[in-house]
Image (cartoon, rainbow, N blue to C red; front, side):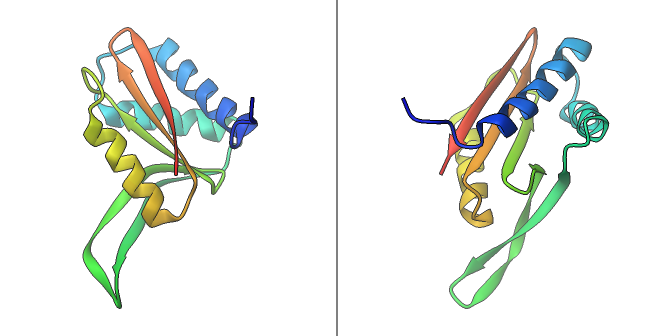
Length: 124
């Protein structure tokens, strides 16, 4: 069996997510989880950038619309947070698009869904 991409870094991030979920549970808005994740990243001295802006290049121009990744952690991993009743294909597609534009290889999509934390590794 092959080695996971950024295995140790991924485990650190997922540990943050579980700690946040164990402390807060479900039912909060996404921004509350984002604030708590940021708190944990700082406390663990994990390098991150919150709401990192990416521009979309098309041929010889930059399109007027851009996107903000919730977090870029370790300058390598996009961390996208949701607080929804369940994840949709559109959430996965969003992460794939973020990976394409950012030229990063891995995204973690996490959903603080009620009484459980759901997370997916998305590799481009």
